[in-house]
Length: 350
Image (cartoon, rainbow, N blue to C red; front, side):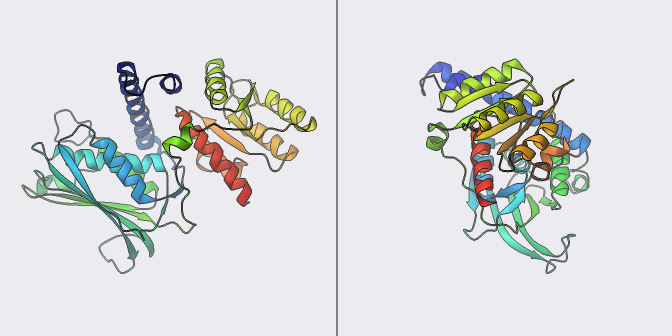
């Protein structure tokens, strides 16, 4: 994924090779999402939560899910809809799955209605959730509907009425929503359509940070970045990707080397602006141990945790382990740059 992203920076936007690379990137993303879906289902997949504008997430998920389809969607997203504290990737997967199901229910085409609204639970007796503020997301289609005898089974793993279905989509959606302390339900009538209701706890924090625009994502960066990873291929990839957009990059192969590089730079009056630490380094010091030392050396260190293990407890609770941000491999370079920006902003707020 990283090398595809790097290659795309050097391609003509409308060229044939660009089109093929984008398809390869999409295939990589689907493989990543399927792997994470299986991990979520089998191990619980602890959410990596952050404050998110639900409207923006819904629009992005629906647009991606319906790319190339003869089905369109209509949004009803009030401007005063509360933000939610969620794992953006996991909830994007939930919305995408519901939209894809709605799309498949209308093979002749049609319109999916997707909405979000603020709900105060306590006033809603039919929703088995604790009292509090929630955001209700609805995905409504006018397709074939679900037989009454199947409604109580649709969230069961491996239950499917589709010839090519795996039966994991709705089971995983149920697991994800439950892990977010939310609730998902469905109502359907044959020949009329189906509506899914997803309730997610509203965020108590301030408004979410805006995502990087395409221009911002490709804008030059600045500063010194220390990259620690035990895989040389990833080291070289990040070196090329970050130096190409203006960062000065220094590489380290394990935690001890990273601490040495960080200390040397700080003592020389040329400190690093951020550190990217791979959590797991077989046989040597990884990021989990290195961040403790770095926080002792510099309590203001801006460190990003990087790991291919989305179930690692550090990933879901990175702040309490001394990190300012997190990226889960495989990630796009734009996701890494966004994590670097958010880490800097969090430190300034602190």
